Length: 167
Image (cartoon, rainbow, N blue to C red; front, side, top):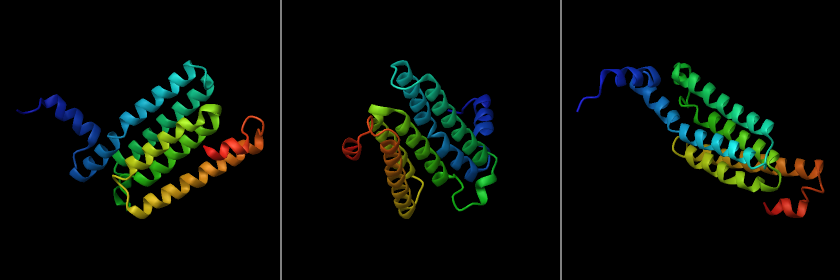
C-alpha cells in the first residue's frame, strides 16, 4: 500500500529528504515522547504542590528549548559534518543538566528524578560509544554529588547530610 502524497510531504518537511539526515532526525524525534511525558510529569508535580508553578514552567521551558535547539541544529544539516551528527552526547548532557536542576528544586521527593536520569543514559546508549556512556555516567555522578553538597550546604536542616547521602 502506498502512503498518501500529503504524508510524504509532511515526512520530507519534518525529517528531510537526504537519507543520512533523515536517520539522524528520526533518532531525535524518537526522543520526543520522553520529553512529552517529562513535561507532563512536571505539570502534574506542580498541580500536586510538590514544586512551584514557576519552577514547573522553568523546567518545561528549558526542556522544550533544549529539544527545539537540538532539533533545529540536526534538521538544518548543521551537525552533519560533526563526529556525532545526531548531537547525542550534547543532547544527553543538556538533558542530565535539566534533571539535576529538577533534583535541586524538588525537595523531599528529589530522588524521583533519578529514574529520569537513568532514562537519559539508557536512551543515549543507542547512539553513543561505550567510552562516551562512561563519560556521561561520571559527569552525572559528579553533578549529582555537587548538587547534593550544595543543597546540604545551603539548607542543612532540610537536607541533612546523613539522609542526602543515601539518595
